Length: 589
Image (tube, rainbow, N blue to C red; front, side, top):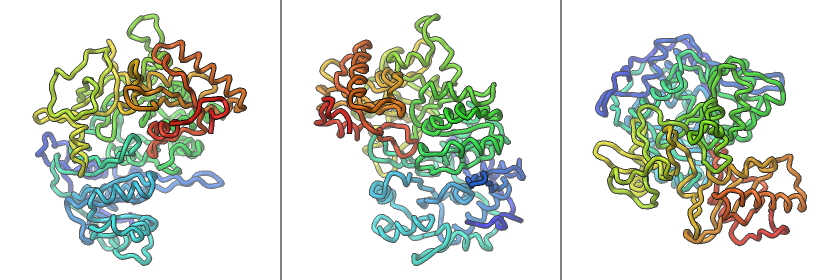
């Protein structure tokens, strides 16, 4: 790690104003957002890193000017080491000063940082590395050991940089590159349609894919997020998802990086979120539902208020309304919880506030239930209205590629369909996967429609309702069942922590199986589970959407995705459920 002394006496880079980027051919280097903020607010903290200690948290910080100048040195050093425009660089560095500075340095260089979740496991990670055809590798010593032990996956790498101490492997160190490097760096004249980065999906519903991001896509994301949520430079953001911390810096917010394992957000210690929010007077926070499911009840139990927190963004999976309600009890009185909807390939797409979700009545009747209550009746999860600039349409559900767009594909409002989106934040392709691109993208002149892979419908008020992943639908002899129209019904039961609907058998003749993870406080004896099973089956018979469910299994801990620890791995559960008896003696692991 570079010492604090390195940040002194550095000079800002010359830059192009990305605000001038209006078309695909316009000059747009997303790294220049840092340069703009360093010129505007040089002495404000850009990144604060929190570390939990026995006697309280300790913090280190770097200002916007210092971060800008550090990224310049890294850019100059990387260029001297052979890194050039267009080269693909795997970046495996822990969240912190160096991570943020390196990303902006590569963007200024025109190099293409490649980011893969290490939590997906070594075999899957190496498969992603092989497919991406890397030119360079920048990583911590542990990552370098992986490279040395599995050289085949890194065959094309010709530039190696170690962040930390270098041992027996080749290349150089980040500290050596920064030593004596120029304080100034002129960002290259990338265009809006030039590749900026490759971000891998989590692989929660299939093989992980490298999403190609252009400089213009990132620029549009920053502007849309800032406009949608009223974000102002000078705010303080608790970034429980490291990649969002990069957006925070680009928008002029101080990014506070909490002490947590970013690849396992569901294991975070609530105090490691709460204490930095209080100490740094955070006004905003972003994190997975798994984080807030622990933090919100912790605050209520301890009687803790977070009075400066005016904005909480929760994304990555459907958010239980109970978590939203709990958060509203602990954040600022005028604060708001937002649940943006989208995907790695297109974000943001839609959004809804917690107050609307909890208080607005359903459009079907003025005296009907609140929007959140409809989920418990099989209505799906409301994800709000499309954000300005996004064209969202629902089309007939299909597993086949669609060669060209046609308005005839669109289904009427109120009818279930596959969610597709077009707009400036929609990416064009997956790297090196033409068939996956063909299945997920629909060409339409100069526009590309992205098939998110989700099923939903639009209500009379223009709100979009998410009903589940297309690949997770259960197709029985009597009709099709969707996860988000079934699971919330059972999740309301006090003994149920969460549930997962899966199909066993061939599509068209699948048998629906509900797999349940018990709440920690629920009785776990064989007799109590047998009784609970009968209660849940009775509940299934009360609702039309769940009536076909006649088989319930219990699972000790439902498997979840590696990025947000919130999306349930139903493919794995379906395999687990195959051949398993639903008799009381075999009902659990």
